[in-house]
Figure 1 (cartoon, rainbow, N blue to C red):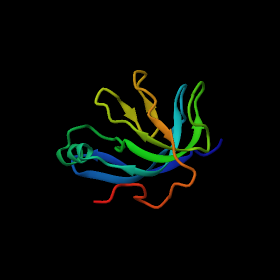
Figure 2 (cartoon, rainbow, N blue to C red; figure 1 turned 135 degrees about the vertical axis):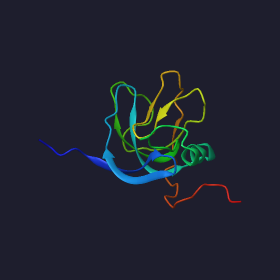
Figure 3 (cartoon, rainbow, N blue to C red; figure 1 turned 90 degrees about the vertical axis):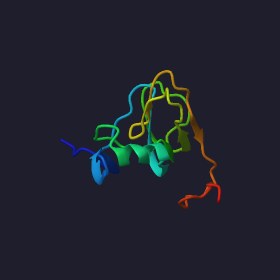
Figure 4 (cartoon, one colour; figure 1 turned 180 degrees about the vertical axis):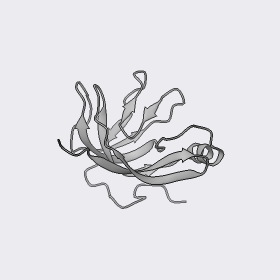
Length: 129
């Protein structure tokens, strides 16, 4: 039997408790894509949830990601395997599991193919302040 494939993630375990852990790599279901994350933004709302312990753990925060599509579930349309993408899920009505690329059926596809020559440097393409 093959060993379960794992990935590193920062996992929220409770109020002010974030841990770098190895977790199983999810398999995309029908209509889903798995994205290897190269960069991830953490928004102030996520930080508030961590600081105040507003949600139960365990969970992986981060809903603004850039990476490469590594697997597609049955019937998935849009970017194909090997394409670099940007995924942004910002609607409060939308639920997303970033680790697996899952979103609710009512959520529109927000993934966009990234330019081939986009920099892989951390923070590249972000506005300077």
